[in-house]
Amino acid sequence: MPLSHDPLWPRAGAWPAFLGAADAVLLGVPTWRTSLSPTGAHATPAAIREALPRYGTTLMGAPALDLNERLRIADAGDVTDPDGATGEARVIARVHELAEATGLVIALGGDNSLTYPVALGARATGLITFDAHFDLRDGVSNGTPVRRLVEDVPAASTLSTSRIDPTRIVQIGIADFANSAAYAQRAADWGIRVITLDDVRRRGIDDVVAESLEIAGAGADPRIHLDIDVDVCDRSVAPGCPASVPGGLQAWELRALTRAVATDARVVSADLAEVDATADADDARTIRLAALCVLELLAGLALRH
Image (tube, rainbow, N blue to C red):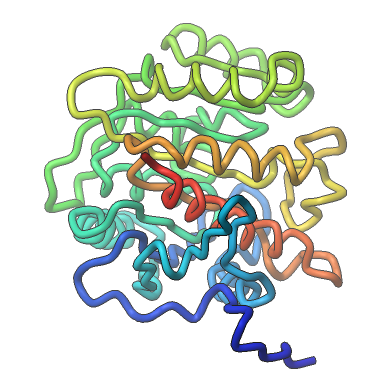
């Protein structure tokens, strides 16, 4: 059914093509070939773009704030064939170009392997993840981006890239029965700050975000990348994430975390990962949640002081 048109109610999405300058820019990074489980995540950037017009662009408040009026938002299209060494090099180069000209690069994945080249392209010095999993596996897959950001430098990239100090990494939402003791020990040995799902609920969002930004944003010229792996959510709100489990974050918790982190000016890039548009519920609830996270990132950017 086509959406209704109301000139007094602007909709999200359909933002102009990136032409060299913007406050925020979307970039599709449809990674999927190295996923540890079968996925149609390469269909997700297009699905998120299709879902965005279901929502408006106004934040309620006194006064209300229209994101389209506050921000210059652009869309840079998709990176073609982003998997593999040469694909990663293209992602790194494109994100680097966009990050030089915008306040916030929002990468639409794709499986979680996109986090590695996007963070490198943004020249991130710190990392915050919303994820049920450590992503510290060996090899190259959607289960390895955090380890690779600590240990690897891409040979195929023509840009100067550097590893992220693991003591500048915070992982929020790590869940019971979704990881191994060996990877928990690897995180501890490296000095990664782990804030479990239970910790988030015990401490509250404001406290967790404040600590995370302090850690990831430390050092000279800090640049934080935010990885939003939607499988951190409860399976009832994210059935389109192959690895989501019952008991994860609720949709409002993910949205609140996303906006709170994005309000910090040290956050220069973010990605949305692990949503398989081809496996979503009939009501597209996972895709719609991902689209709302795009808007929460933009809201955080608009609310920066």
